Length: 105
Image 1 (cartoon, rainbow, N blue to C red):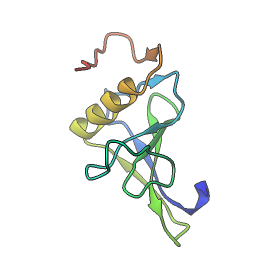
Image 2: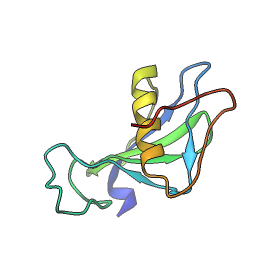
Image 3: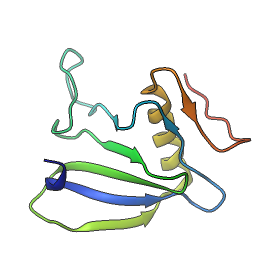
Image 4: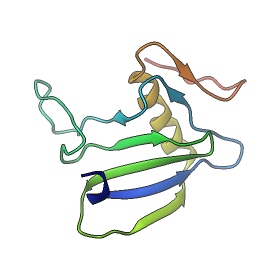
């Protein structure tokens, strides 16, 4: 199932980093997905984020027939949005680079 998803190995821009939390995989709820329905690995439109190191993360999207893995550097605003999503999925702990703060609303 995991191998059938679209993959992107994303790198943080220079001077920035990914955070991680006690939830190893973060799932984002698609915008048009009903609130009463759960979100899982195969939910269409759900983004899956797995921080690998403070400099890299694996992002996965919908299923595809392609086995291509893409690589790229994220923009700072996109990295910040991902880090906020990761913090919101934390059960108890979130870890990041010392001296950085990530506001959670």
